[in-house]
Length: 137
Ligand SMILES: C=C(O[C@@H]1C=C(C(=O)O)C=C[C@H]1O)C(=O)O
Image (cartoon, rainbow, N blue to C red):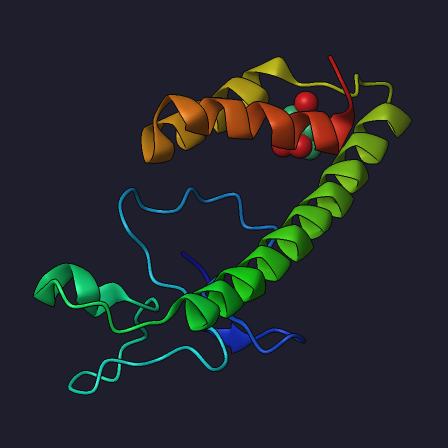
C-alpha cells in the first residue's frame, strides 16, 4: 500500500489513491465514515449494530440502520462512478495506442479478487461492474 491516509473531497479517508491497483486484503475491512459510531474503548469505527452480534441485544433501530445503509449506498454509487471514469481513461489510452478496449486477462484477475472476497455472488457483482465500466463484451 502506498501513500499516507488522506481525506477525500467527500470526507472519506483512503489509505491509497483510487487508481492504486493493489488488491485489498481479504476479510473484513473497516471504512471510516463521517458520523459513524466509534468503539468507546478503542475509538475504532464500528458498523451500526455491530455490537448486537456480540451481545445479542440490538443497539440500532431500523431508521438509524437504514440511514447508515443509505449513506453507504451513496458512497458505493459514487465509487462505482469513479471506477467507471478511471476505467474509461485506461480504455481510451489503450485504444489511442492501437490496443483493444477489453483486456480479458485483467478482467479474470478482477473476477478472482471479487470471488475470493465475496464468493460466487462476488463474481456476479464483478461482472456487473465490468459491464458498467466497458459495456458488454
Ligand atoms: C480498465 C481497463 O480496461 C478494461 C476495463 C476493465 C475494468 O473496468 O476493470 C478491466 C479490463 C479491461 O477490459 C484495464 O485494462 O485495466
